[in-house]
Image (cartoon, rainbow, N blue to C red; front, side, top):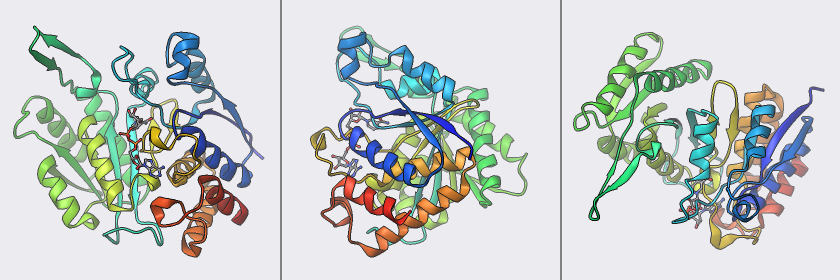
Length: 333
Ligand code: NAD
């Protein structure tokens, strides 16, 4: 059996609960993963003077693959978001967030099967902002041709690999003619290299309306960082909420898998929240490692537990703890 060493970052708030649950399920799938646990986040500031100690980056760089719980972004301490810093440091330029209906998970829609591909290193997230005097502030939106090209290409390659039919580029090029204009122009150029896949572009506001009217019209969607942040939460809401929305941050060399949701501090240590988003992020990780059989087995076990409806967390209408739901899935394996 192939052996993998995977970096595990438990995270803050609900992070330790959901990563423990995911680890239980992945271990039960018997894939031969050895976990290298490293700590990042608020608690590290006192110890190391930074929420992102060097050993975290070293571990991910060495192992190439990490599973990560959410990290709280301290407000007003002068530290930038650890999540944003990780993505920048490791050049994890593609944030992939699938939104797909799951059996028995309450949702207003059926037939949703969307993959959001969000650019992860540029745009207003570059963090280039400052006060202009006392009473004005300015943030610089950075879009490059190279950054746009690699993310759009990533989206088309994903579409081809997964046998998907269409890529939609989302932008506001009618107003931001330079920045989003460059993104759109580049997206059109790259689309020309993939004649087998349909391409369309949509303005972000109209796109949001269309998404809530008929989400089944969408397939792969690619967009700059900020629109991706917002639209991926919207899409999580289309299929049952943040509790079931997995994600991946992928670069050319390394990949970090994490749920879309944050650290939900009010539920810290309660073993209460839905572990599925993190478990399904683990499934994405297994697919990335080429462990397709194990990934499929976990997906099947998840579907069975959802369909039986005995061990569901509160967001899915049940009363089970995170660990009970994870154990039920692990037992199916
Ligand atoms: P959040 O996603 O942590 O929580 C918002 C609400 O969503 C929760 O109160 C809860 O009702 C629900 N929710 C979230 N996860 C759930 C789960 N697994 N099961 C069931 N319900 C769930 O968003 P927030 O409160 O805006 O952010 C809290 C902190 O997390 C902030 O510091 C933020 O910066 C950080 N954050 C981190 C990441 C990350 O690490 N990638 C992502 C988003 C937010």
